Image 1 (cartoon, rainbow over the protein chains, first blue to last red):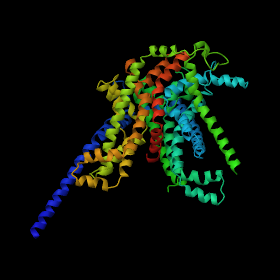
Image 2 (cartoon, helix red, strand yellow):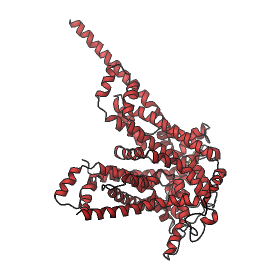
Image 3 (cartoon, helix red, strand yellow):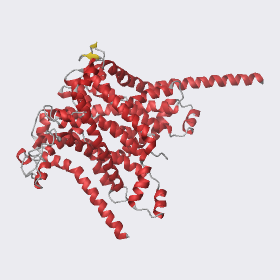
Image 4 (spheres, rainbow over the protein chains, first blue to last red):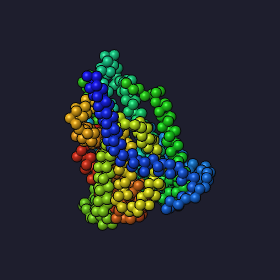
Length: 309
Length: 275
């Protein structure tokens, strides 16, 4: 009896460890493609980029160690500082304005009105449209001589501008396009957040006689802060990486380029047009550090304004 | 009271219609311009409708650039990226969510750290890898790094974690191995998550610009996005033809969106609330 007991126990232990080994085998097998792919194409390249930022890197991967030279050059490069300033202006203007508009539209759509689906579809259209095409049509709208915008302004006796080639306006023209093309996307996420808000809060507030505006600021906004937090973090990161619209809307030899080019644009130009890949690697490391700082500040400040239920 | 709420509704509709008009005008102007002659397009003050629809602008756009090749490259590379991510991400996500194994947390955190880094950091080394294995100017180059996604793995893991433990216990008693549980039990339940990831990947693949611009410089290997950008770069000022080209590049995605709008909206919302 005792012997049998022992036997079953060892069998049990054996069975368990077999099952565990089996589990492990399956687990490693199943994570292998993604893990290997991410290591080869993302994680190792990250360290390579860091390494390359201390080298003079040729087009075919040959390099020479130059120490801190790229970083020294970067600090003295007025183009980099201008690009950083452009990126900051772009982000600081496009993200808050865009998100406020998204909240406003989401709130209007959330007020039990007819045609919700139609409105949502229309507002979402820019999000599924290729940025290249968006840039093309906006350049055409902004065209100084024949563009729709200047023609409309003329009707109100306002003098037209060279929206994308005048250094004074170009960046703001790009920002308007950025807002236009992201509002619908963020709105859909925020609206989904609003639709999850429990009715009971509103019913309680209505008994207390709260109006629409009060309910919006005292109930809706606090309830959707987790969604707003997500949208803000993602929008800031995306805005800091702006490239497509600037690359496509501003001509390469335009005088407005210096006042509009973003950090990523500068990186792209240094890496793949001027073939200074080592210096470009240093450029992109700056971007990395900035995004890290922004994300860190965001997460640190979140307990000040984000309410999780 | 009724009157007040009606007036409020009208006011809301006016605001929403105003916003919708602002959203739609660029699209309408794109379509209208694409159907005008150059003379009509540059008329001051502008005319809204052309005298006659000039469909030949589309023929011209399609003859200036090899659009057939662009469609092929874009559709094939987007499809492979999407299938690859759905498969690889869900497999990894299942293991991370449902199996205990050594170093699980560590590996997961390392993979997740990819999300913290701006994508451009990887570009130069990725380009050098692709160039070293001789894949520049191929469709494979468009697909490769996009087959793997930390974001997708994270998103689907969140999905798999919500399922009750009893689900696989029954399957284990029946003698199913993990692959069977993953494929037959979990995947059907994770469909909303898979659709969300698919939509995200399709949008990213279709609209991506910088990567195709870098790896594929020969015209017949370009995507719609990069090809269209080259049209812009040629200082072509024939706006009707440019607009026709732009429409040729965007209509498939818009059509897919209109057909599957529920999935799109829900998918985007899922990436926003679970991601």
